[in-house]
View 1 (tube, rainbow, N blue to C red):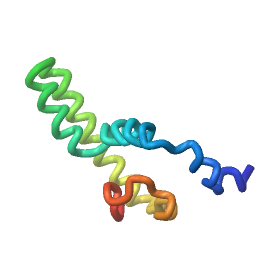
View 2: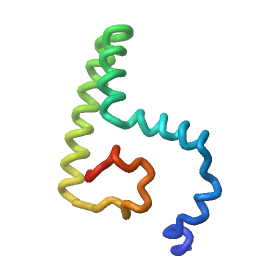
View 3: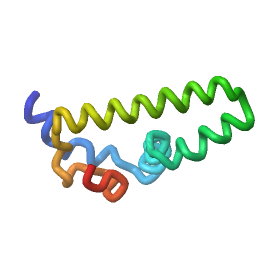
Length: 91
């Protein structure tokens, strides 16, 4: 089982351009530009109170996440396994 989890060669035949495009879209939902677009639109077009609370929640989550990453300083996996390259850079 240990070898299965660390050997990524079984994943390569499952990759396709269509699936990559779909999952890049899902990945975008976790990056800052999405939040900078989505939160103001939601605030202006939907419920101001809800999106104000959501903005505060996301800000608190980002601060706690950054603090926990600094506290544990657990490195990311080997860069050879990163699929989104420049977007995560040196984080």
